[in-house]
Image (cartoon, rainbow, N blue to C red; front, side, top):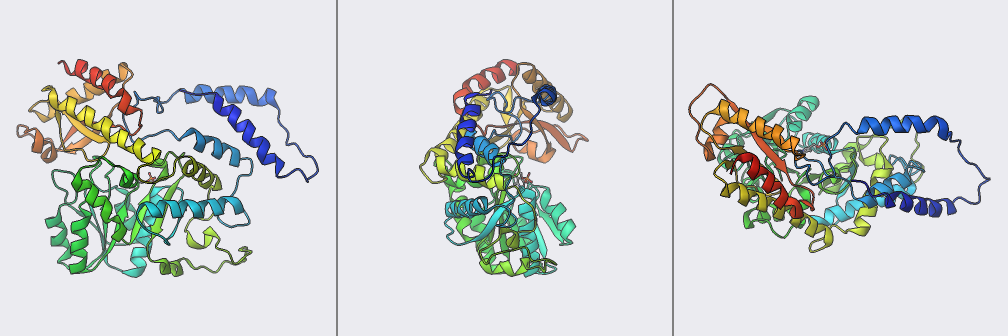
Length: 446
Ligand SMILES: *Cc1c(COP(=O)(O)O)cnc(C)c1O
């Protein structure tokens, strides 16, 4: 799972970095290999206690390895350890972050947004809802019942009234249920999830925009996981139209650490209207912002932030620009294609039922059956048996009503069913789908 040539490339790049500081008196930080070695060996041993996330046989949760260029650039920049709070702490990495923000905004047809990287999608969504509340104080935030649970919790933290809107059989927000809520006249913001974390469902943004012109509210697109699929070329026409509508929303969250090939600690929030910057103003007791150029700390809630995240993302954009028809875009197509392969194979096997029409690269399915308890136990067993074959899937609790749409169950006390879930978010999954299907078919007994 590890290509050791990466380490040599880091060494070469470090030599170049050092050339920038040769006018200083020689200074070599101390290093005691004899003491470090056993500690590092212990760390490596401890880290063996993990699922093999980088391997294509890991097809469970939403986990994707960083690109080698991101990993090397991150490690390289750690020798500077820049802080993107203020230019004083990270001049180069702040400039790189601003370039990355322009690249990401361009994916959605935005040219001059206000935006910055964050520690992750939670913090990015918190900023977006905080701004929403500043603009529509006291008004409700709505998100679908399949939206990330973070929205309810963030609203609680910010003391914003929040309500969940029912989703339909596709896992996307139900438009009738949304309009029922909007008619109450107290909605400030609707969160459109552009790729739910559970099912990869994309909310019907064009219809939410229609409702916006009737009722007037802010639209925040939570595209933490799904945002990069705006670049994919093999989505269904309906899903494609939903992504195309993202140019019209007010704010966007997208996580480079989900589908953008980055190590954890890299989210991003964008605001279309740059005037929201006024809400970030603060009176620092000591003015450490040393120049008139924009310090990222002036437009973000987080203070210290890893400049290395920006460096890694910049390197990745350099190698694989996030544009349509590029190599990065086609790597997303391969994820969708891997999922289509697995979906078709499961549909062809009567031992399984696919529980929705997957829109992106997440599939939720079940061992066929008609009793909630028996089906839950069978799915759990298949999950365990697959793991023993080194194929790692995930489990997800789905409401009985959702399962009933595709696989009618006998009436019972159970409210949820344990189902199987697989996220095929590595492009290599397209080449390995055949192997994965073979194992599933064997375990499914067909
Ligand atoms: C992952 C995710 C989040 C939370 O982001 P973190 O980076 O895990 O903090 C929010 N919304 C959606 C849709 C997500 O997939």
